[in-house]
Amino acid sequence: MVDAPDSKSGEGNLVRVRVSPALPTKNKIMKNIKNLTAVFSLFSTGITIVTNGTNRKQFFGCTVNSFSSLSLVPPKFLFCLGNENLNLKSFKFNSPLNVNFLAKSQLNLSNKFAGSLEKRWVNTKYKIANNKVPFFPESLGLLEAKVEKKVISGDHTIIICLITNCIKLNTKKPLIYYKSKYHTV
Ligand SMILES: Cc1cc2nc3c(=O)[nH]c(=O)nc-3n(C[C@H](O)[C@H](O)[C@H](O)COP(=O)(O)O)c2cc1C
Image (cartoon, rainbow, N blue to C red):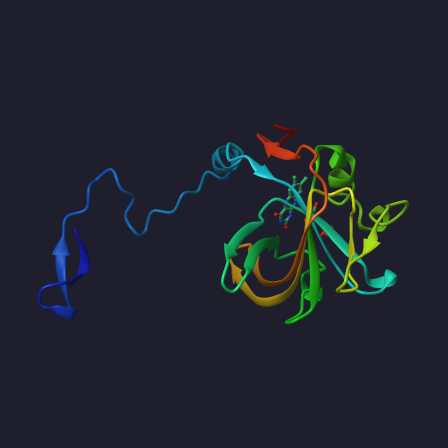
């Protein structure tokens, strides 16, 4: 039994309601992270590289599959970065950033931008978008945006962004991530 607001007698009054034993109660939080990672990996996603910085010395890019569209009016998306990510601070309020939707042909770029920070921009072909942030012209599509809000939740921070421009770049096959491996459609 748990306490719940009584819809008949008004919001403030709590009544006792029966909860199915199959449902977890509020104190039961899943602890088996290994199993959770395995189940999360069954959700296939596209892959993006999020870039920011408006001069060469400050360029940052990171492979991200936590991207999700969020709103059409106003146009928004979100993605999540681990709280230990040293570049989290660079995603300041109103600062510009780009999201590159990766093509199958950009598998190596995906690995590169998930690897050593120092090597990410070495011998990497990029162009500069209208917002002065680098992007990868081989990508399927580009979203130019600015940071609207950051919400810390658990071990990640949700970064909510307002889209300032969007461009279809190529009609190639997408790069897909499923069961911790790369795929395509
Ligand atoms: C396919 C793929 C998807 C990833 N998605 C995310 C993500 O959504 N958020 C995140 O923080 N790191 C993600 N990572 C890990 C980062 O790319 C990176 O390796 C890690 O955050 C360390 O980055 P840093 O050196 O910039 O701190 C992903 C890695 C791969 C290979």
